[in-house]
Image 1 (cartoon, helix red, strand yellow):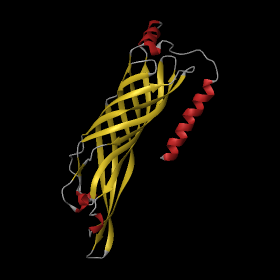
Image 2 (tube, helix red, strand yellow):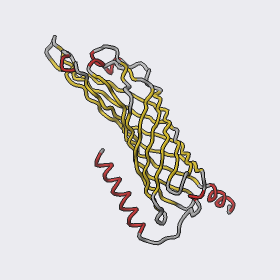
Image 3 (cartoon, one colour):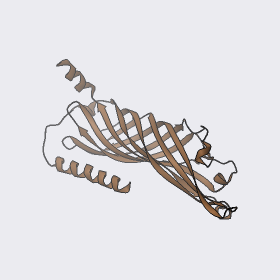
Image 4 (spheres, helix red, strand yellow):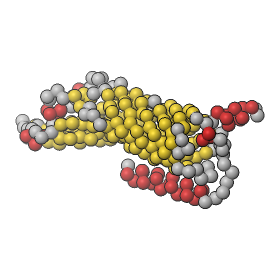
Length: 248
């Protein structure tokens, strides 16, 4: 995953630098003078956990190890952008995130004196409510890099769903996730709309594990959600859209 992020960052940077040196006619020249923009974001995410073992982990007779296995999901968000300043914007991007995280327990069976792997599949459907600040660099031709940061509240619609016994470990998660978010991207100004590629890191603040005193939850002191989100954003310009349809 780190290689993918590095390659993506290199592609965005090299594309921006190569095109910034050429003087070109600007698309959407009045875009930044509009106070509000709307659009849509589509993308993929990699959901994961940060697991902190409890102090009694090494005293347990049955649980030998706990590992989390991230999985790839997808997401869709509505983009609402309010321009505060030439270089600053406020963004509210409600949406849905679909994904899955697996947890693998290595359990020791003293009867047969063997180690067994127990797999739990945790599916999540998040209602996502991020509020972000966007810092934009000066526009160079039809490209502009930016940074984003802020926080979000997520509600997991699948958190209280019963876990199938065939998946082994029975743990439940709290439905609410409180996160801080950091990311970067590049805006591409096209003729009738603005396109952007963006990478965002989402780190959970609160402990989402519901402790029920079983061997599976006793082994964990706290568990935080984390994810990486890669998105394609499409934002329209009311002025250009009206002009486009008036010519039809």
